[in-house]
Amino acid sequence: MSHTGEILSNEVLKDKYCRAVFRAPEICEKAEPGHFVHVMIPSMRDRILRRPFSICHAGGSQLTIVYKVVGRGTEELSRLKPGEKCDFMGPLGVPFSLPVEDEIPVIVAGGYGAAATYMISERSKNKGYLLLGARTEKDLILTDNYKNNGFEVRVATEDGAVGTKGLVTVLVKELLEENKGKNLKFYGCGPHGMLLALGELLITNEIDGELSMDQMMCCGIGACFACVVKVKDNNPDGWRYARTCKEGPVFKASDVYYGRT
Image 1: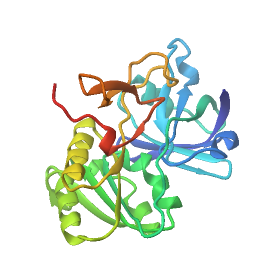
Image 2: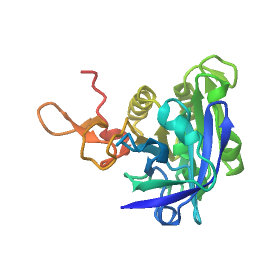
Image 3: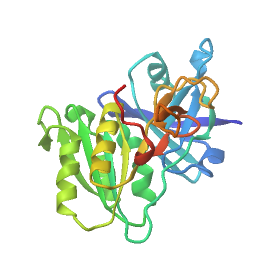
Image 4: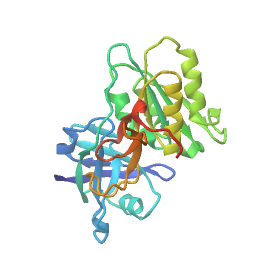
């Protein structure tokens, strides 16, 4: 079922990253952390495929998405003005589960994966950590927003311009060492390679987590099989393909297949 979303604001957040706020009460009513929407951009009706965007915030009637201008679709979206409307399908997908009791949330994000996990920091009663990895300072977003939600933010950049120099998994290892014996609940969203590295690290430490394994989605409803990832299975191969738009995008780290073949 589709809904109409009216743009309330659409502005540059940082460098090539933008933030669009829509009036979309029907979607906000059901949206949970990790859900996404499939958007038809009015100026691209010559293209039959919608564009998927993770939901960054959903409160009252206002839906927020954060996106990076990387191609024609996001370029056209960035040009839309307040008052213009888009057609939405959503909320779609399997969401994250919020921490319970004594669980300490640890969000591990790469680049604008911080937008897809942001609602966890808003809705979790338990406060924890954001471990954010990026290539450069330009790719660090929403850090102040996480801090305002009571999360401790730790940063790693590949060029070493901000925070720890290296990959975000360095921060994960440090946090695990500091918090031995504590009940950490891990969430991950970012580049596919980062998620595989994170999942393997968690399993090595006998910890499970939830990973948003979103791939390039075409239909958004599980019909085209363009967004598949490998998950464990009892068949002779030990794995099968799962559709991230329908069976995910959120999977348990222990369910993901990490074989290299």
